[in-house]
Amino acid sequence: MDLELGDASLLSELWRSRPQLHVFGHIHFGHGREPLFFDDSQRVFESLLRRPRRGPVRELIPHAGWLDVVKIVFHGVHGLLWKYLMAGSGSGHGTWLVNAAQVYGNTGKIGWQPVVVEL
Image 1 (cartoon, rainbow, N blue to C red):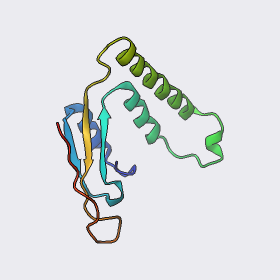
Image 2: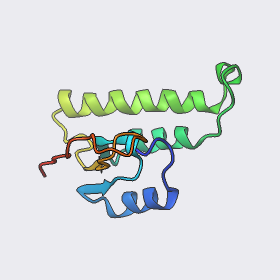
Image 3: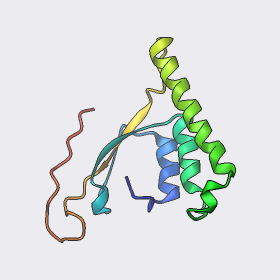
């Protein structure tokens, strides 16, 4: 929810401490909430986002990032199958990420509704 502007050391701390709730709010355009699950799919997704951009044409040429995409799909399908078909617990260990910014975009005016999360 940080529009890829986040701090790598803060992300590492989230993975280490695994809180139930993480609230932040400086990036106004990223307002809202979303769950974060500490699982293999999330780990590979973050690895993919850390890769340097290659440009629109070079991204079409097969490279290591494509393998990350395949891994994300594999871990996602594996998690769903385990959780729903095998009655396993799935990842189940996650946190809520809440960007509590109240200013709408760069308008300087309050425009977002408060975010409510039930733990």
